[in-house]
Image (tube, rainbow, N blue to C red; front, side, top):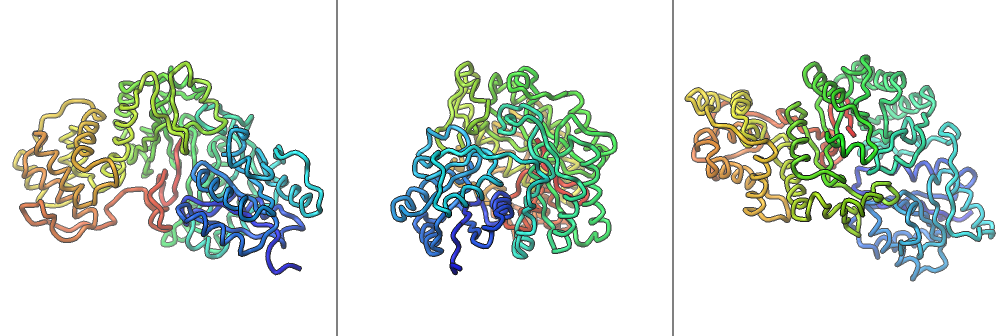
Amino acid sequence: MRAVPDILLVTLNCRYSHASLGLRYLYANMGALQSRCEIMEFVIGARCEWLAERILERAPRIVGFGVYIWNAEETARLVAILRRVAPQLTLVLGGPEVSHETDAQAICRDADFVITGPGDVSFAKLCRQVLDGEPPAARLIAGEAVAPDELQPPYPWFSDDDLRHRILYVEASRGCPFRCEFCLSSLDRTAVPFDPERFLLQMARLHERGARLFKFVDRTFNLRGTTSEAILRFFLGRIEAAPDDPVYAHFELIPDRLPERLRAQLEIGIQTWNPDVQALISRRQDNEKAEHNLAWLRAHTHAHLHVDLIAGLPGEDLASFAAGFDRLHALGPQEIQIGVLKRLRGAPIARHAGAFGMRFNPSPPYNVLATDRMPFATVQRIARFARHWDLVANSGRFRATLPMLLGLSADAGDAAAEHGSIARHSLAEGHDAVATGGARFERFLAFSEWLAARTGDGAPPSAERLYEAVHAWLCSAGHCDDELADALLAADYRASGLHGRPAFMRRGLRGPGGGRGALKRQSRFAGAAGDEATAAAEVGSSFHKVV
């Protein structure tokens, strides 16, 4: 037997903390070829020549690549190098990025075979044909879809190192019955569940081995209430049994489908409030019910809610997007994640490009550059707004100051008073009587434009410089006087866990100290795995993503 593998399964993950579920599915379903197969995971950003060296050191005969939007460009360069320096290799591509518009992609021309659609069993079949000297004549192979419960599970192939240091991607169902046109899942006809008992047994085994970070890739986790409830009971049971050893699970939810028995345990999200836009992109959503569910969760649970909004959808202008932001912010979610629309290959959203003047970046991540309702400059303003909102609001570092930035001075007073006596003293002197006015989105957009002019649009400013910039904006724009700005930012500075004395502060940090525990940023995945805080929300000790 060869001391090196005949088959390599390769992908470039976005970060080390991400463990590829797709490669492990392929490996689990290799059958008799599994002993001749090996997984190699890399992280984007490495030199392609170095990656090619590592692959060729293993002397494989077949290399299969998982190609996704985040690694498409680097994988294309890597495949091009391998094609030229090792023409004897059989190069196989799979994944969502090469499953659509295949003929238009240079990477597909460099490959020997491209599997479109599901590759769980088709890749193993192709490898057997190639190794037996009987490769198929066709380069494009339509992946064979099989029932989920006919697949071998990938979970035993997460290593102990994966369990200790990485996020484990899992799925309780495949597909989606909805037709949101910005999503590739809109091409599916239905959602097909895995057997719940079998799935929970696999989760129990992972937990017994030490897994604590679970990220569900299901597009519609709460579509079936009984199954969702059983999975939540499983995780909440582990949390209750060992509260000092919490489990974090991350789900994607349908915003207007929240059964009564699940409402205390889940959170929801919004992509757009505009009903005309929802109709255009085939997103079925009861806005009133979604708003009620979100308000109920905020008022009656300890859920930390992360909600998504998408800018650049067909038919939506800046005024509509701003109104949607204000409506959502008024409901009080802890995080609002603003994304710019992306044209995923194969997603039906492309059908609106002509009618709505939609122009997309030709390179990944294929973000919209302009529409007939949002010119390029407007899209860039929203993109800057999103980055600055993430730094200031979603980070949790400006809990006391953010309401003042948004013109909500009474809330600023309440938030500041939570953090220490200096804030309480300043507010008691009448400094909370600050005039408000203007929409929240407009207020923060003005700050964002000012900050970009001050700090540039490149790398984000340091924490120290950001605190100084917020202070300067509050005072120079006439939103509050120096004393109140000092009080608010001193409270936030302590609560964020920073030490020492900010250079711009004219008074010391008085009052009780805060700590990093005061931050409410949904950063469990980030802190545990070295990842940036992603779309997640905490319910008890569980994590959830919203759609």
